[in-house]
Image (cartoon, rainbow, N blue to C red; front, side, top):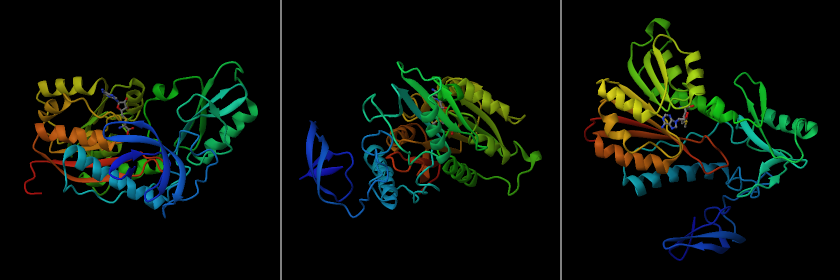
Length: 367
Ligand SMILES: C[S@@+](CC[C@H](N)C(=O)[O-])C[C@H]1O[C@@H](n2cnc3c(N)ncnc32)[C@H](O)[C@@H]1O
């Protein structure tokens, strides 16, 4: 984001403190979009993007910015979203936790094959662009893509094929051709190492035993895991002694959560709003509600229903600070909650996406 005098202009592939010549591509009342034509004087944080197809490929937006500066900007994105959308000035936003790997962190990729070409879709188009190597996917996946390029097995030269490649937790690489695999398997976090740090963080902010003891299961209280996916967060929390009820609309994800479940974990396929309404009608109470909605955030009608469960703590995990801030403004209207802290995580280095975990407490006075 830059300014022409005081007028805000959004220009992809610029960096803070660049002085640039830009072409305005669309003009709105309060801002404009522009295209970078020339860097007149470069930002001190500008670096040479390592990838040869950066700016053409749609995968990364920030490879031209030094990693420390990326972290700084993500911290500001969270801060600004809370100020601008939720009108919050004094929230404790902890320093962002960097990704253990700034490159080669993605555990899955989707490539397209058509007319002898294998690659990613170009930014804003369905042209396939080939690449020698991708800087954000795990190297094992990159090797698999090189193999696909050599084999071209099962690829119809006249049809576009969608090939999904993913790395399982045990290090095995799988590929699937023309299947909506992600939807079939349900959501999975893309950055395995950073997902582990997020799980550790969430476990650390909720009380639990120092050592895991199978007899302790369920003794901490009741935890509702909304948008639970495959139980990514609540299965480790169950090991710490929480009794879990998890809800997700994706049946495969619920199936996978149930495979690891025990007598103190219950996972149900359904819509979160419908399920919370049912729980409220039955007068169920939960000490903790954890929610991890998709990028669009939660349905507005969820908050008055959730209030009826009288949870002491909410843990809101978000991959979109703007919808989080909007939802927080709505939560405040319905419930006497305060944000204790927000912990941002860099789950998606080289891109502008930010993940955060908000720790929210009921009835805390004078924070
Ligand atoms: C960001 S993912 C989080 C998944 C999980 N917490 C994890 O860490 O893997 C969001 C999840 O919300 C689910 N979902 C989206 N809309 C939903 C709804 N209205 N009711 C229930 N689940 C929903 C999706 O299936 C997806 O698993």
